Every structure is written in C-alpha cells, then in structure tokens.
Image 1 (cartoon, one colour):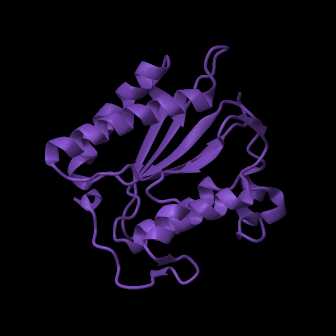
Image 2 (cartoon, rainbow, N blue to C red):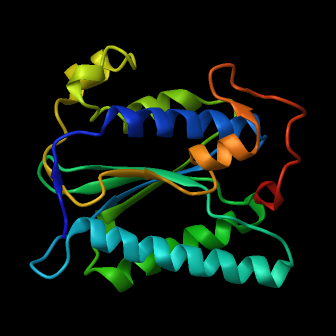
Length: 206
C-alpha cells in the first residue's frame, strides 16, 4: 500500500548528497539528468509508473553488460515532485559508450508505461566541469523544512516552495551507491575520500 508524504526526509537527502559525492570520488560521476512527467490514473500511481521505467532500464543495462562481458550496476538517484502534475528528477551514470542508445530507448520505455506526450521528457547531459553538486541541491529542494537550513537549501525552497504531497517512494538511491555500498568500499563520507586507495573505476566508466 502506498504511503503519502509531504517532504523528502533528512536521512534520504543526506543519502542522495553522499551518493553524488561517492560517484564522483570513484571517478564515475552522474552524467545524465532526466525529468519525466508522469500521468497518474486510477490504476497506476506515478511511483508505480516510474518503477516500471526503472525496471526496463535495469533489464537493458543487464543485457548490455552480458553482451560486453562486464559488470554494469545501475547507478542513479531520484526524487519526485508533485505540485500540480507529478514528475521525477532522475539522475544517472550511463556509461558514455551506451549513452546514445540509452537516450534513444528512454522515450520508448516511457511510452510503454504510460500514454506519453512529447513534452513528458526533458534530458540534459551533465558536464564534468558543470555545477554538479548544485544539481544534487536542486533535486533535494523538497526537503523536510526542519532540515532545510542544515542542508543549505533555504534559497531553493523559498524560490520553488513545497513540492506537494506524493504517494509512494518519494526519493531513492540505487543499491550501488547507497550507504551499504559506500561503507563496503571504505568511503569516508565526511572527508569525501576512501580510507585506502580509491577503488578502480568500474565498467560504468566505459
């Protein structure tokens, strides 16, 4: 059963922020930002539709990994916003060699999960030297108001306001970037570095 929330929790905002740092510390920072408008119906909530899109993405990535003979774990973070029509901010690491194919397939995945329209998808490439952490702040602007100052999100919240009530999982981080993965890799989140040497870059950087 889906649960309603008004804000992203402090714990999840911290998890997303640290996932951004961890991906960059590994030398494989997020490189694609997609905003997807989701059309809710009585039968399908926005969270359910996006879960179906993520499932198609994971299946595709697993298939490509098998063909290439490499390990390609999904790497992403997402947050939902729901003032008016619900939409999801989806930030991913797509291996550069597969990015063109991903950009071709994403609209098709959306079209198979909902009655999509041309304006339901906006994709931007994240440049290495661009405002990387600013994007993390932006997608977390729906933070619990009690912690907005703690995360330095006051200006963004004042500009965009609350992000509405949402039913379902409001935000998330892929298992490859969550706290368990960071701890297993010996990543020190406070110092933004690894306890030993930096882990070798995976095939996600290919």
